[in-house]
Length: 89
Image (tube, rainbow, N blue to C red; front, side, top):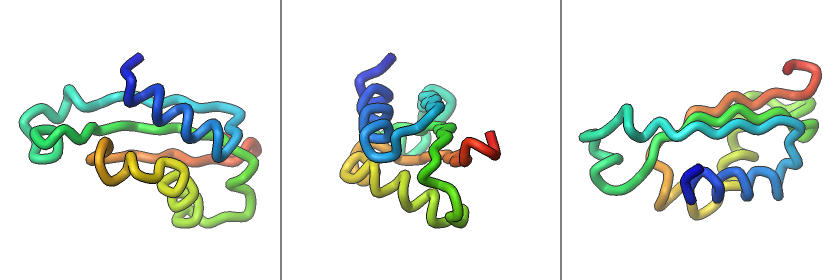
């Protein structure tokens, strides 16, 4: 596991207490892409948390972005988010 994936997981676990969390680094698939050349990675996140209950897709994504904080501005170029409640998983 890369340091960035570990950092993403740590932040999401601390903020959203997920029942399930999977972070995949897809950066290699985007080699040569502008964001990749500048050092930002491409990641796919599947997260299941009770904190998403009653929230719209946009609100769920904002919770994830807020949890990642500064990493969204400097370490992550692209992020695919699958945010589910335990009932949806």
